[in-house]
Length: 430
Image 1 (cartoon, rainbow, N blue to C red):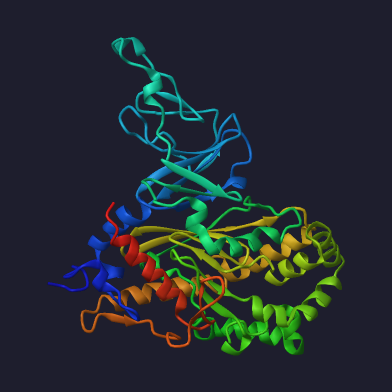
Image 2 (image 1 turned 45 degrees about the horizontal axis):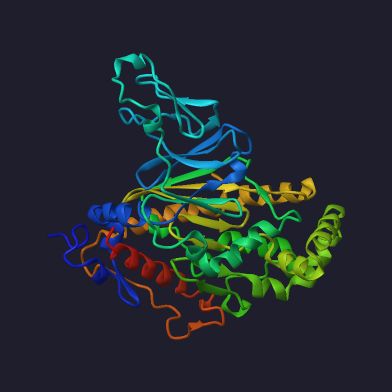
């Protein structure tokens, strides 16, 4: 039997303190169990409320293998409706996004409101007197909640409310929003999609690879900045000497914490920002909205917490990233660049240009990552010594005052944290 494609032992035996078996990335059987116990049984990110600002606006997203409509109803409420006609089970919404006054099933013409109620049934007199349209509304995701506009659903009892699930990670979601003086973002700038032949768990937070995978672009940034490297607010963020950190915040939520290194360069960065008219306007609006102390903190964050919310959401640079598993060996990643509300146009334009240059289809960064994920998948099919090693920084990690497990920026704290959460969920009976 092939030990990589057929697990010969319990799931909990596939991951140890510093190692993982290749089967967790290659086994179709394990992938199906992931769908059941992770994506269909716990909190999963669906979308952001600003994607559907108007009555009737909707987005269709995948939650594991199931199609869900995030829609804003006539009452202004955001709902998560299962994309399944209550008659014969056909998807009632074929487009990925749009605006509708109602949803019509094109099989037999049943019509549903944007709140899910069944409004009309053609030839209704063919049913007996026990038929009641109120019994045939579109099903809603059983658990549905949002944190500051980030909407999550669970298709089975997650065992914990959303705030409890997010836990310490909420502290690092906030800077993504509070880079705006209004504390809000808009997700209206389209989406980049990357599909690669590799496992979904590769899309993690890894501070070890940039000096090698992205060496050319790091060298280019350094050359462009010259002696004024600090003023770019960047320095070398992936050097262990930068003071930057990796964090495991529990429940699989992890991050690359660039705040320490950015704080060291803040004065130069602020001077450079204020030298631009729109930059000075932005700083002034932040100080007015948040007060000088919080404004300083948010400007250091620069709207980039670099945080991963397990299992399928990341906030990186200016983008919301959704990870969509397709099979054990295929994944789609959706990247939504965001706009800050209440800032000068030049601020958002600069953010978008940087996103395009690194994460876009012809960018200098994200395409390299996808290529490596495919090579990783090829290597993991080897049956000779099918274990990977994740011990970097294990003996120097520590627990901070907030309960986070913390290591240096190149340590594999994030990988270990997410695999621990993976084991916990995979061993939980649904």
